[in-house]
Image (cartoon, rainbow, N blue to C red):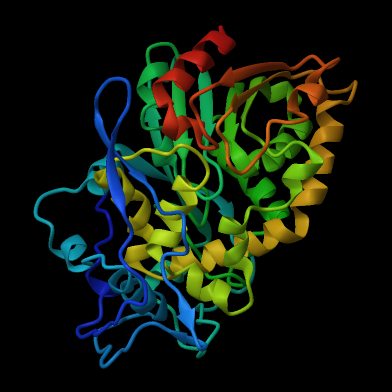
Amino acid sequence: MAPPLAAPRFHAALPRGLLLRPRKPLRSWRRAARPDDQDLYVDDDIGDGFSFSGGELGVCVYACAGCKSLGGFLSALMLANMGIDAGKYAEAEGPSKSDEWFAQGRMVKAHALYGNKEKAKDPFFGLTMGSGSQSSGDVFNWFCVEAGSSSNPTVLLIHGFPSQAYSYRNVLPVLSDKYRSIAFDWLGFGFSDKPQPKYGFDYTLDEYTSALESLIDAVAPDKLSIVVQGYFAPIVVKYANEHQDKLNHLILVNPPITDKHAKLPSTLACFSNFLLGEVFSQDPLRASDKALTSSGPYMMKEEDATVYRRPYLVSGASGFALNAITRAMGKDLKAYIESMRSILASDSWNTKTTICWGLRDRWLTYDGVEDFCDGLKHNVVQLPMAGHHAQEDRGEELGNIIKRILR
């Protein structure tokens, strides 16, 4: 049995002295409740979180001794500028929600890195990056969480962009009685490796397709069903088209499938902006909370929000990866969507396919989805109360829908 995993700590990302002057009031939060009366948080403010004025960030830094990476410094700076007490993440006693989730998983090695394994350097000053931005070896580490007996049929749960395997935490137990379900973090997300772009992995869509094949060979060498949500769906369809004999069923959850879906929403597109994209992608709230809450009627507990923030708090590696994948999406997403539409409409496509759609998606319109599926062999299942990240909004409901589909 593998030794227990230990989640990376946040101490290294914090500067010893930081004086910041906020330009904007703190975000407003209100209490909300789902039908089961469980207390949850919903973000009322979908604003930018912090502002620029006269070309200057609204902060004043007087010391940054102790920062071990540029990304770590920027992460701490952004938190303080938004009124978040970063110290509480470093000093919290007892295991956090993130620690508990990390302890449920294991690392799987898959997909060899390219190049000469040179030490990664930051793109600004050419300084050697911290361990979080370095490749962990000749083959990448992927964080996977598994539920259910290995003798049951396998279901692979693939999160969207930007998200984590944690988004399937309420789906996994629903499937575990009948299926061996596996959720994983893509490279660049969650607890999986986050190599600096140009040092073993560049986060292109073609690379993700090849990497997915390597991971599936490692965790599910036999037949399986796949559930994929959001903007990674075209990558999975490309893989599935080349491995139809391996698939039992494909379930697409709020995939970008029409021509209108080819352009990233501004909440995500901002991470690809020249220079500002590098800054925005190091902002833990913009990269996690805002990206999730702006896509639908999103409700989550603060303790869940901290899990999504954690990678951006630990080091700058997650931010650099987010910047790179956003640029790749902006460049190649349209072509991948066109290819996915062509594959799903082809006479040679024989894989059972279902599209599940959260109707309260603020990023991708439902217009044209049913029209595309008309005349094809694909079923459409609606989730009226879910947004773009349906597995996060209505995890148990989606889990039961998946079970019905696979039966």
